[in-house]
Length: 46
Image (cartoon, rainbow, N blue to C red; front, top):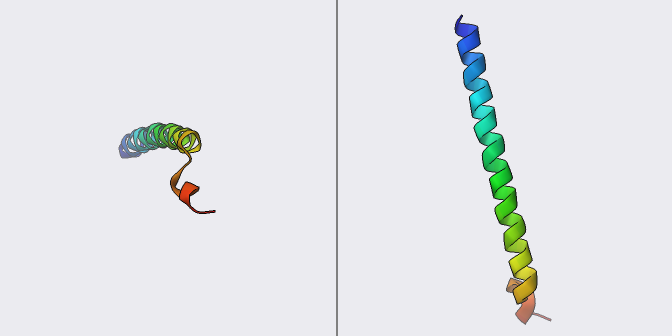
C-alpha cells in the first residue's frame, strides 16, 4: 500500500519535472530566437 503511494508521488513529481523542463526549454528557445533577432549579448564584440 505504501509502495503504491510513493509510486504515485514519484510519478507526480516526475510529471511536474517534465512539464517544468519543457516549459524551460520553450523559454530558452524563445530567448535564443530573440537574441538572434536583436543581435544578442555578444553583438558589440567583433
